[in-house]
Amino acid sequence: MRSSRLTWVLNRIGRAVFGSVAAGCALALGVALAAAANNAADAKAAPGAEEETALLNPGEGYRYLGQITPRHARDIAASNWSVGAETMDRDFTVYANWRKYLGPLGAKKARIQSGWAKTEKTPGEYDWAWLDEIIPDMVEQGVEPWVCLCYGNPIYPGGGGTGLGGNLIDGEEALAAWDRYVTAFVERYKRYVNEWEIWNEPRGGRGKAAVQYADLVIRTAQIIRNLQPEAEILFAAGGAFDIGYAQDVLEHLKQQGKLDLVNRIIYHPYAYNPDSRQAAAMKLRALVKSYADHIDIQQGENGAPSERGSFGAISDYDWTELRQAKWATRRLLGDLGRDIPTSYFAICDMRYPSRTNLKGLLGIDDDKVVNRVKKSYHAVQHITAVFDNTLTRVEEFEAEVIGGDAGDHSVFGYRGNGGGGAVTVWRHTDSPGKNPTVETIGLTIPALKFDQPVLVDLVSGRVYAVDPKLADRGKKQIRFRDVPVYDSVVVLADRSVIEHVLEEK
Image (tube, rainbow, N blue to C red):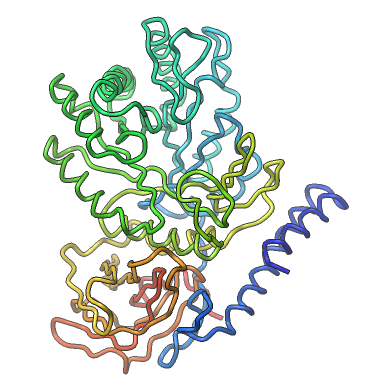
């Protein structure tokens, strides 16, 4: 029986026989049994085996120490990480069903959509109850919500579309109503929220449509600035990721003398291979900096399905929970290595009117109730536990990969507050799962502090002590031999970097 199916069965038995409280116990038991089953099955595969597996046995010279222990968001001061909590405005996912998983994930921010049409169903009357349930509770869990102010509202002529791809607001009556709504929203929640995004994936193409969006950005940003001068304001690079659209918006803001109103540009770089869009992200950053040095980029929405049969972006592939987890490690650590704030989309599968979007870290039944925790949830927990604001990226980090094809690997270096080093490495050439073979490479890096080197596999969370004989130390460089790498992220680190999250076995 597949582990996800086992978890689902135990959850449904718990609900049917014992009710919701015991169902939670059954779910927890199911998750534990599923994890045990996964470990037992994966442990049979040796490194380099044909079947796809998480990196559970790195080979000779590595001694198993234990596991990365997740950290609650309340226990993390700050980090690069956000998680998507979108579509609650259209009831495709229900906060009460997954809220208990939010803080334990360890992400410090969560993206939500404001839902104008859900909040104002009668002109001039705002029903904040659904948002009052979400926003203060997120903050209590140590997670700062950042709000995408969207979509339109059909109760006003020209009020705009109410979902993805919908028209922008058009007409003075609707725009005036939008102004009132934004004012009321910011006034109510500014003590919890200081990061505001204006609309989600505006469509319509470049030129006139981009100028219309830029005008909406200006009027909305001015309202926010008047009410919350220190707010961070974000605008979108088109329907998902369109550098030309972003340039049109920036040019209009420049002509109007309004570049000071915005802080970052949001982009959604969906791709089967998450590394394939990094060059375009750097091109977007260069464009942005050519207009204003205070503006930067932010990856605002990106995720992969956990199985084939989903819909939406990058769904046409043989996705599995393992491949989704690998994808997540590469998307998040690829962004961290370029100092890009980043978000994983989404925390929970979303039940659309006819189908379920399977990009969540949590699986759901048709009734939108969580039925399992996916491998990707645990992978993200391992990332948030290790990579917080106590690690600083080493700029212009020079590393040499020996034994692998030139240019096939991503390598980034970090330094902890105590001086300990950490290096992330993975093979970036293919979509996760297309070439899962574990290979060994040599890795020459600057002489960071590696007094007690360890290896961490972020998918499984397993930690291994590295035999000192595998490290040749010089005054300016360290060369590690027989480093196992594959199509997911592994970390070489000084033990001091991960000591606080290491649970020894």
